[in-house]
Image (cartoon, rainbow, N blue to C red; front, side, top):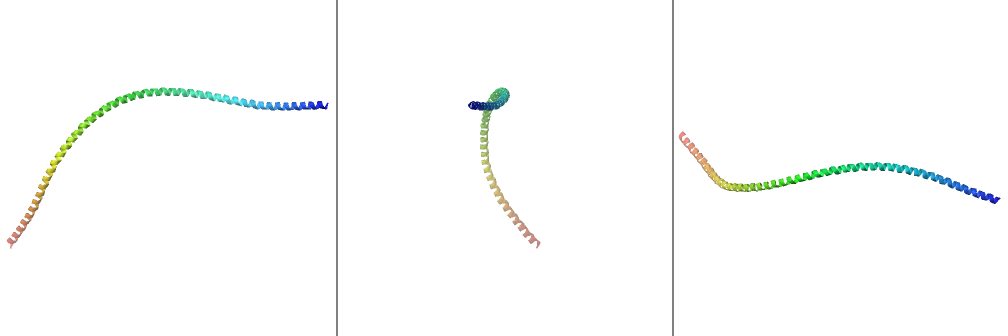
Length: 165
């Protein structure tokens, strides 16, 4: 009987161990359930965030499409402007060619004027030399006349002294 009781006690111990194990498993299941519920809540939050992100991406895509359309319009305008600029450049190049031709003519005329001025300067240089020589002669004549005037005054003074005696 003791053996039976020992067997019953062993079986009770095993049942208690199984019960303790089951309680532990239940506690683990509850923790897992809580974790799964948290994960589900996180997934829902992530899903909401993803839906918001998708809505933002759709809005961004729409804005980008509008920007692309605007850029295409701008590109068309720029191509038109470039064509106008090319036409204006051709006109300017023609005008520059005309200016260059006129400038060449002006340079030729300036060269002719420079030659004439050089000729006039040569003639003037000769005249200046002649005038300088004449002025030099006049200066000598003036010095001589002043000398003669002084002598004449001296002679007059001497005569007045003789008359006064």
